[in-house]
Structures are given as structure tokens and as C-alpha cells.
Length: 176
Image (cartoon, rainbow, N blue to C red):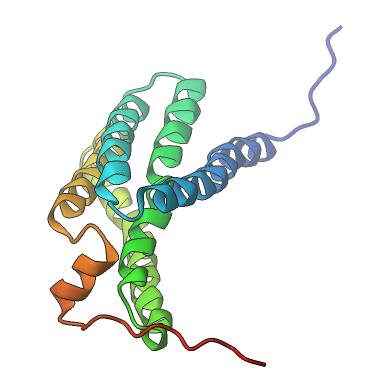
């Protein structure tokens, strides 16, 4: 007589969803370290990472097993998450201190809009075509991010030049 599992399918699914999220959290930190070491130049992180993400997303979309779907989804999530800090760091370094809050808010807001828009778009694509087409369409986002990394300023000084901001003043030393 075999022992019956008491774990529900929903609990198992929840555990599987945690894997990419935990891997992404670590990748954000690693991406920040890489960004710091490159002194900006976010395309050196974003283009290869988004290329890897696109490949992993295609493999995920056409995976025939749950294990493959989770593994490739995790790899895609890690690749995308490596780009989070490089995308944020370059523009923030080019802004005056009094504009950093609103600048980061605009970048985060754009991400939140995409996070809100993606699920219904993916659902509509799945309804109209298939889940394979819906998940494969995520490759378009990776391609857009890679192209934008190639077209945008690569360091804080270039951001200042592109936005017409003069050189930032050196912060006053605190003599307290």
C-alpha cells in the first residue's frame, strides 16, 4: 500500500513559482555588482542577458514538461533580473540629487505599467492562438530591451548630455 501525498497541487504550484522569484532576487544583486564594475555601459549586461532571456523564453514556451517549463522560466527570469540595476543605475547617475526620486519613480512606474499590461495581453494571445504563442511573444520584450540598450546613453555623462543637463555640482561636505 502506498502512502498518499497530503500536499495539494496548488501548494506544489506555489513552491514551483517561488523558484524563479528567489533566483531573480539573487540576480538583481549580481546585476547591481556588475553594473557598478562596468561604470554604466549597461548594454554590456543588457544585450547578452536579453539574448539569453529570449532563448530561454522560447525553450520555455515549447517545453513539454513542467520541469522544463520551470527551469527555462527560471533561466529567463535570472537573465532579465540581471538587467534591473543596470537599467536603473545609468539614468540615476546622470540626474541631479533633487531629481533622483522622480527619475526612479518614472522608471519603476514604467515597469509597473508593463507588469499590469502583460497578463491580459498574454491571456488574449493564449485565447486567440495558444499558450505557446503567448509565451513565445515575450521574446519581443527581450528584443525591445536589447535594442533600446544599444540606442540609449551608456554612462551618466552621456545621460546628462542627452538630456541637456549641465555637469552636476559636487555635493557640499558635511562639517557637522
